[in-house]
Length: 123
Image (cartoon, rainbow, N blue to C red; front, top):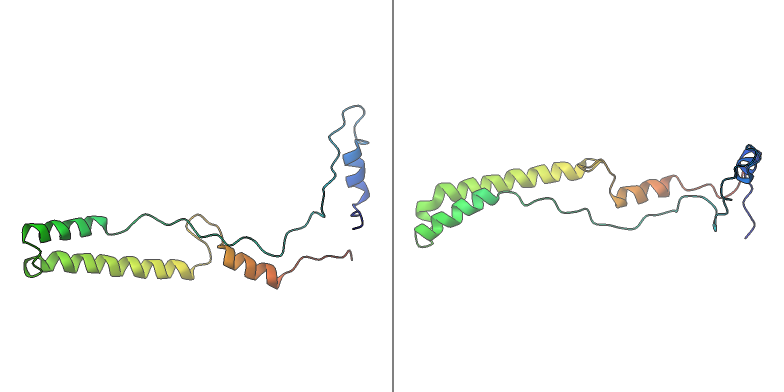
C-alpha cells in the first residue's frame, strides 16, 4: 500500500516547520484517513416503559375483584387506550429520520454511505 499524499501545508505543519522550536508529535496514520463504507449495526437503547401507571391500576382492580373483568372495564379500556397511543407515537417516531437524541440510526447511516461512497483515488 502506497503512502498517502498530503498537501504541502499539512506536511509542514506536522513536521514543525511552522514553529521554531516546539514540534508537535508526528502524525503517521496506519491507514488512509477516510470514513469506512459502513458502520456497525447497533440497536437503539430502549426507551422507558409506557403505560405503567395504567397497568398498575388495572391489576389492582383485578386483584380487588378476584380477577373479574366486568367491574374493571373502565381501567382495562384506559390501559388499552394508553397502549394504542404509545404504539402510534412509536410508529411516528420510526418514520422520522432522527432519533430523540438527534442521531441517525445505523441502518440509515449505512444507506447514506452506500449512496455517497468514499473517493478512493485523488482527482
